Image 1 (cartoon, helix red, strand yellow):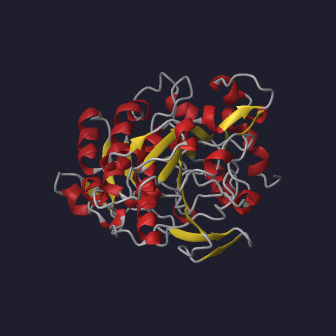
Image 2: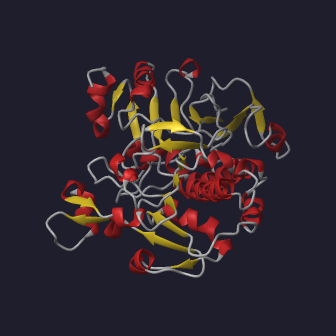
Image 3: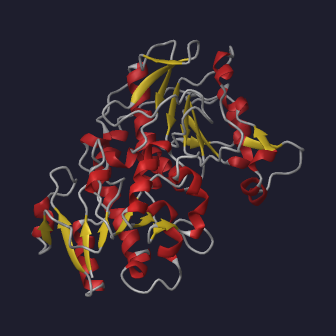
Length: 402
């Protein structure tokens, strides 16, 4: 079997790769049946020579490969028919901008295996960049504090060679007394955010103290759905019930908007779940949040100030609560928002190595061997010219009817 590691063709191109040089070598050792080639790329975080120096083949043409491995969406004209592709397609939630991509993949008899839907039998994702989104998102929040209040200046994460250098930058951060940071979501993303905050040795406090006490040092509070939502019927919160019936819950986040100075949003949000901050909330006299680092980056809901996804090149914008429009990022009358939707791309080498290891251990045995546990099958959105049964709900979207 011949497999190719793709150059990223989405605009703007992503610098990450799903098989880093050392993991590529390991792949060829573990799966001697695989003839692996790397498509040449000037933009990739690992240079071509970092692969060839390890004895790997770098090529321009990958049309003779059966399996093609990427990170983000493939540029439609670059798709090759009758191939097996692995990348984030961003089609399974009926994203309008990628409808034509799915249509073309079905028409070209492509098997689309989506990283986002690679799970175990319990639906737990096996590969993800979420940790790195949290790491960089929290760092961008710290940059925003320094810039908004003139307290310090940090290098951008993308200007750092790796995470180690970025964490050295974090040590420059000096926060005022009683500066309060609220973080939502205790999954991979939230844990990543706390890796960035760790060098600050912030006092972590519970929700009650965060809301009601004044501190002589900066503090952070980390909450999950059991604290930022509550059941409408007044019954005790249960996570399984919340995940199954999010529509039966209402927001419980408003008190935090009156206590926090900065908000780092790391939660997973279901559109049926309650929103966190409505547009009218920003008009409250006691609304205190001045900086929102929205790592989750769901547009408009559940955080009304996330009116767009920002970019690595221009990560910050100001939200004007009176007009519901964008303005200068650090204007006193605006809420500073960071809503970059490809944050791991700021630390591409670290993120790529981490992701590559997960693929090597948890996915490639099924992809290049026997898929006895259905890992590849569960993640396949289309195959043999049609949607797979699991993703048949996309038929109307595929046909342009919804």
